[in-house]
Length: 118
Image 1 (tube, helix red, strand yellow):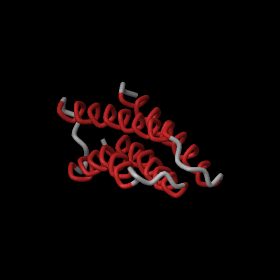
Image 2: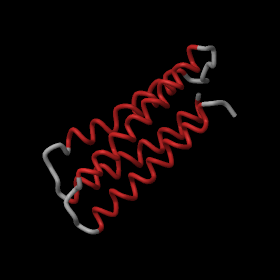
Image 3: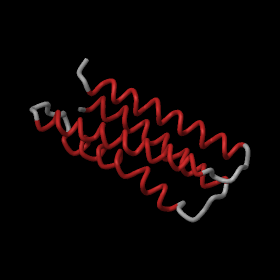
């Protein structure tokens, strides 16, 4: 186990937390709260830390089996949440929380995949 593994678990766990919080907002049919945006941005920061750590491992000589898959996962990891937040910028409806839930779930899955292919 290397130093990047705990970061991967943290990102996946935090993504699960954001997914549950956002899904709860959809279930309660409540307008999207501002704190959910803050949780989503914190998930993005954690995803960036994971991506930078994975890139540092790659530059230090740890070669993934498929470089294109690895780089694709890193791109998805850092782009999913900002895209979701940008598309829902002006919409505070309960369904906008659903978009955040889906994006957070995808970030969690991609974080696990990054850890598997690196």
